Amino acid sequence: MAAAQAEGLAFRGAPAEPPAGPDPATALAGLIRDVPDYPEPGVVFKDITPLLADATAFGTAVAALAAGHEGVDKVAGIEARGFILAAPVACRLGVGFVPVRKHGKLPGPTHAQSYELEYGTATVEVHVDAFAPGDRVLLVDDVLATGGTAAATAELIRRCGAEVTALSVLIELGFLGGRANLPGLTVRAVLGL
Ligand code: AMP
Image (cartoon, rainbow, N blue to C red; front, side, top):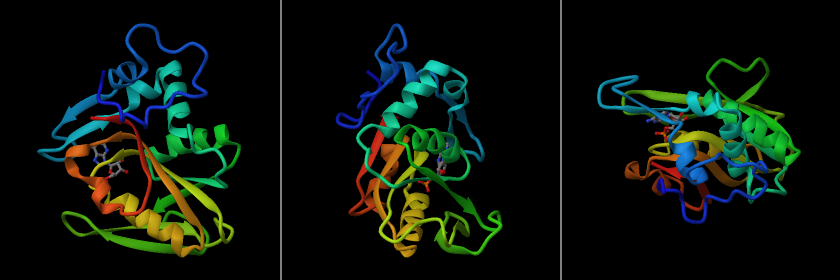
């Protein structure tokens, strides 16, 4: 089967009728398109738009991302594809959704966290009133690569006085070693590619 995380691929609560044919992880993996040299030479971009366009697969992915994370107070999604996955995960878990956005996109007062990219820096921001003190927050994104984005976002959420319970991603690019940049954080991946 497509390298699914052994313990991470929990399809508890998945739609009653899973995709016909191969096992669910293989079915999901088959709907992720590799785009070589995008957005720059040497990068293989994981395009999830075919998966999103398939209602059964989308529902299965959302169920898998949410499984085991019941009891959180909020779900935070990372701009931009993280929003697409995190919002339905929040609905499924019956809690609110918080957007973590790139610099300058949120209208109200924000906390900001900058982090290093290969060339330059990036900044993620969240509204200062997005979390109540002690909120338990599930962080959701599409792809875990080097872990820099998730590490900065987790730090941002902690600075707001909330607790990050876990990072749930659709795809983990294990060869980039992102988990090593997330010490102490539970990481669950639906697919390891
Ligand atoms: P990183 O901070 O290196 O873990 O990168 C994670 C962020 O960049 C996520 O928000 C992803 O949406 C995006 N990303 C990184 N690498 C890829 C890739 N190969 N395909 C699609 N998105 C990626």
